[in-house]
Length: 228
Image: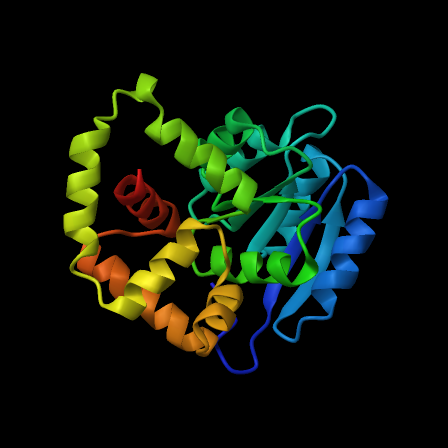
């Protein structure tokens, strides 16, 4: 797996969407990034699977809704492979069912198509590194589903537990964690905190270690539990 942080290496991307205008717009946005190359495009499930087999991309940007086999079905196929690419779902809808269905299908993230270009590029990088990434609306849907009373979530106990866990973080690690819970990307958290993006990554990473977490969604849930 190529990593954007490797000198001279570019992330190889495949764009999958049944609308040509969407593919063109995404290509223009992502080709501007020095660490990314769009190797090909596909318009449906069949051409997507052929493209992935032929080009072995690092990340597949995959439309949720397509004629024939939908994006969730394709995501399940891709992520079940021995050497799967990272899959980043694209949608015009932030429906809770679609977001959760995408994550259950093995996707590393869910981003709305109207997301600003810089955030789409950052989402690709996060997905390439194996970390889940959700647009703010999608993150809210996941958190809402996980903390709903019908889920059997004991809010009082969860609040106390979450606050104890967060108390182990430094002040700056806590600030970064709150930014994650708000759905901000690393660049936006860095601007808020007045530090560099690499420093934010370090804060988030050390927060994961102290809390025993593996991804941003879980971190957001802990922060949200503490604030309920």
